[in-house]
Length: 404
Image (cartoon, rainbow, N blue to C red; front, side, top):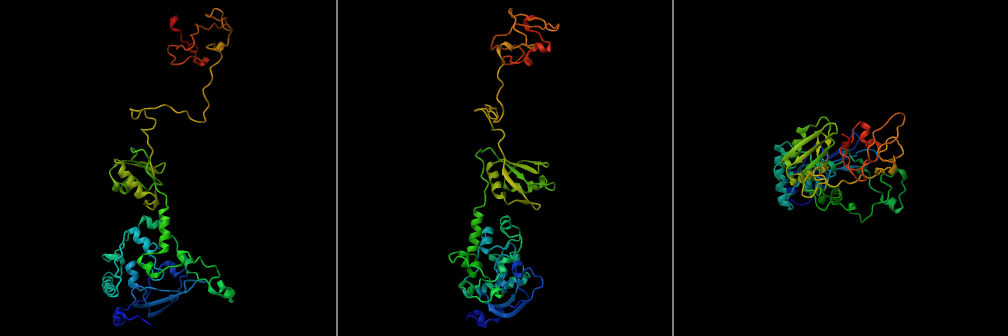
């Protein structure tokens, strides 16, 4: 076994001896019956250069053999898998997790300081039974609470495709003679200029210059955002996607932290609610922090801005008044007035020469009064001239004021 000449060479007490590796579900594979080969002090850790116990296994059929790359102490400090170096809780690169959770890396880079730091971390791990969340300060202080953004970016199922064999270099040259028996993939390699083809394990561990993390963060930056409306008087948020298990108390517990809430209206039949804040700035903060992030009782909640009700069609200087009415598109226009000879003639009779009374029809002698001039307003009929018989007051038994 070849090891570098540093403090680890002369201090075998710091060498790591473990019984089982720290792995994610993807690296373990889908086969529950797994056989591993263990080799004590078989390799140096690629981060701290300390010899550690190496495990090697095959995660499944037509998959490549995998092995641990870093020691368990370095893995516990970052809460990562010993093989793929991805976060154990979310399956994301260290750079993405640390940037979202605002975790600052304080791991020393020099050999002596790193050796002392790891000894201190080993002592704390022994006291806390190896729980990462109990570590105090530095990179070991990782939150155990679920983060909305990380939960959204994380994969919901293991990605076993990552365990596939490497590409056969002989097949790329056209010289592979194994055919289907070749344990490597017969596929075209990726573009050499692709940043994903050049990854460094130390950069991935420290969370710097990780091309996979850069790709994920670009996807996060392109996510849709909720822009506030132009009307500054709107302070109401629409909360959708509710069910019968979510009540007003649950909504208040998630929204009161952003500012003073004036009113909460829950509409159970529609499965939504309206949260009104006293200040516009508080409503904007709540919309920014909850849009595409809020989960209540396992339900993903939809957040939208409410609509203005009091300012629509207001007259200048009169808030809340009714302004000029706008015609509704698609409706038929107003009916044209009837011909002049049929105005106010319920029975369709020819106009009388005297203009005072018409002849009887079927023994009925209707009361006829002189037609008012064009544009005149008949008392008791409201604005406008009479156009149709249904507007004639004589049909309902009324009399003209001049005849009373």
